Length: 549
Image 1 (cartoon, rainbow, N blue to C red):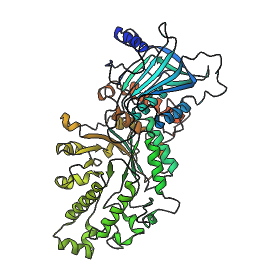
Image 2: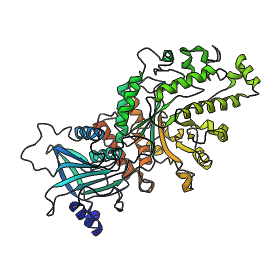
Image 3: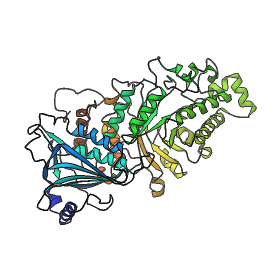
Image 4: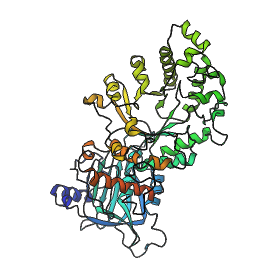
């Protein structure tokens, strides 16, 4: 492939010349380069998903040394997270370049990776700087050695740069060497939204810890950064809560449980991939499983949800759960659910009905009372509450002003929420519910979190969006192929510049890149389904290349 538009531009040529003379300390935001259209698919050429914000590239092909060395600098250069990520990506890049590859007598073009991280702060929170600059310089008369440089303000930006670098590299089966095409590269990249999530439901079907880790690993390939862990629901309560040890009697079986150590391991694993874990404890509905261990939480044996609003024990137990798991989940957002609460059960249970009458409350009033009391408990542990949109629709004026409204039912909720000053997460079920198997990839791709929001200050209140993998029909046998590749379509919407990914011919530009990324996932061991099957997660319809299913 020939990207001659880059080398024929005098400004770009001068920039690349200067880069080879400068050290690896260029600022992440020091250049404003013109965006270039992405080329048509050729398996020899590099494709990047999600699309970077700004980049220039050339027409050279460089070889990469399988003994590529890492040189770090900056306050965060010594981070173990960075060095472990380098080793991890090195295994991905050189998977086929083993001991039988030509390692002697070969003059490799690229032998060293410089990683510059300016901040040594390893705290991972909402809005952490994930921007990075990636430079791949070629050797010429001025420099006999080519080099790769990633520069980032945070270690998590460096992780995103390593992912991009890994996608630029391609193993040549003829020469048995790893090649980096279309060099020199200069990429400046950053996320469009600070919240780019995937919900994983482990109540409807238990998912083993290793399966959750595999999902997290695959999320990092698409630069998603929040795992919304819907741990418990009415069907099962698989999480250990030390203060209330009978709660996980609500698990399906004694083997389908998560210990405190399991949960901590998942959170720590996610952090090393630059991914926060937001836990959800959905109240007062979706909680029948709680009563398997503590039947007093049920209004009556025939009325098992919503949780009993009339008893202080209910709120003492919620406080105990949150106190225990706050030690595990450091992320500032905590999801309290609040959806699909049917209060008829309260009104028909004598002691709850009497409690309502004593306080002159309706079922709707009690629903509000419960949600607000749960929010008070969450904020007492320094969490910011997230609630499904029904709470906003029912009593917006009473919600904690810090509440993040989570849209799911229909479009138009985020515009209403941000107009009232609330922050919002977009997950419209019509396009971003992955258990809806008949939603095609392009509907996922072109769904816009800012639809209907024109005021710039209100647009900033939209944190981002989340695709939801509800687990009624997904378990460890098929969850990954249900998530991928459609989650990648949303991932690019949430990361890349809107103008760059909203124009052009869908079939020839986006689809070919998404099919390429789907095959990248399968090469990395992620069982991603074909892109264009009518029903998501369906197997191929016949023999053929991964790239043209």
